[in-house]
Image (cartoon, helix red, strand yellow):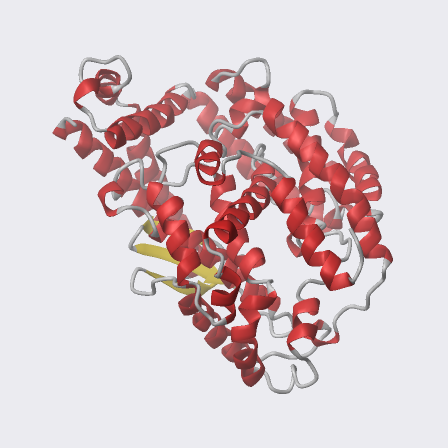
Length: 501
Ligand SMILES: [Zn+2]
């Protein structure tokens, strides 16, 4: 590849790293008086990044190196993939008029303010006009970026490149219809809520120590990353050798720290696993948010809520919290961390009910963007689906339609990536079990290296060589499917609850 083009790739990558570092710091350590200064700094670096990205000279170099261009023949397959990924990113940026970018940023600010006020006064109507404005701008954005008659596709493309509504809807609908009776059956058993998670105190310093132990156990490289504390846990990758995670410590709810850390570690392991030859290039990135989420969910749920993992870690957990866990054994702990109950809040949902929260949001945002659902009817449409899918009704909109921040700043197209993550995670984990017959025994010995090695070879090290579904198909032999996820739920919860699901 031409050294000028390679240098531009490095430059764009470095600017992004600086943006990520400054954003991470804003969420974790920024002194409150520095908020305005940091917003200005970020805006400056972001506009530099944008200028460099839309630079016509970069467009020309990419056209020469792209498919059918005069320089394409001389490129290696990886270099061709780099050109493809950067061209796609650049095209989306170029098609977005500067006026629309500014209007969106303003409407997002207004949306967040209105959403906060609507939450504090418990009145959805306060948020309604802001959401209507955001929807109108998102329709404009979709039309500017291009689509085949389905505006949602253009927004989805920002998070899940290559995925389309006509591919996604049948999968999420079938998943929804399989989950509704399963949730009704499990919820109907009315198992008591685990006592060890009902108000007992877990020292937060001990919790922190234990999350550090978990990071080491799963193979997160603490010389190429770190963990801190924040209210909403997240992962922010500055570079494959500088991956920042956060976790949350709650004295009466240790799952926040335990599974929050495992979740973010899953994201972090993916970022740390990129090939060295891809560093500072467009290939050192994850093909989609859904595939990113597959790694967090795999470590949080498939591994972290599995019995085998706790065979090796439960004794240490009991040592760390001898009083709170005095009357709890391994099986009681395993059942407790897998308690299924229909609940109002998405982020607190268990892995059986979780995807119903997503189906509801996906259906509603798709209908709003298509102009099939007036925003004024959103709360009633929300509550009606909560009743139908989960059998419960929110007492007010803060525990219903106003609970997530996504729509507050007009983010549409993101929600389905959570379900894609759950589905991809189950399919990848099933493939790992086929490839590694001793996997469960390895986990029970506290050895996660066979699983991590398999993920590194088959997924992490490839970066963005292929779109998400193609990468999954290359590994599992099948693309997006709910088959593995449903088989996993039926097997695990059938055994835990002693019934046939
Ligand atoms: Zn995540």
